[in-house]
Length: 251
Image (cartoon, rainbow, N blue to C red; front, side, top):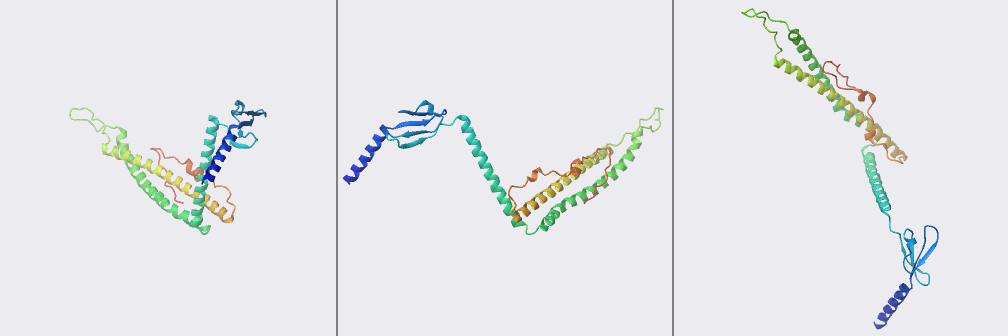
């Protein structure tokens, strides 16, 4: 026991002696070697070593980071973290894609099955548009009488009777139907865009699946959000109140 204690004391004494004779050494930014009992000023921005009197390196001292370097390292760590997140998410999607589809033709089947309800909504909207346009035409013909502003003769005092005014219920119905027509047109545009997005996503997924199957999927595919609906769908705008657009054909 006493021997062990003496050994530990001797080791501590050696360390203290080594530390007492330690110096600091670096190669500064201009390439000059700097040595001092305390860290030299010129070593502030470079790697510095604490060495013993015999020249043995005791420890390495990295320079303090500037605020810009701290921000740069933080930004790099954030980019690396985001890159890993994207890679993990892509791996998850790839595994799900491979588990969902077993043959290329299934993409077309699933796409048409997804688009089916939208085509049904388009058909219903077109049918309703026909009914709305028919009723609006009837109301417009009825309103022609009131728009003419013709008098209904004279009263018992001989004064000309005022031209009849359109009934509020008639005016209100026309406004409601015109508003509904605009809503139907906006819905039709929305359905077209939704179908275009589904078609674009299906195409992207199919290409990715084929690349995974063939072993050529090196990089993530283009983001589906960047896929643009075709120009035909983008160019459609709601009809104005005084127009009567033809019913759309469901493809």
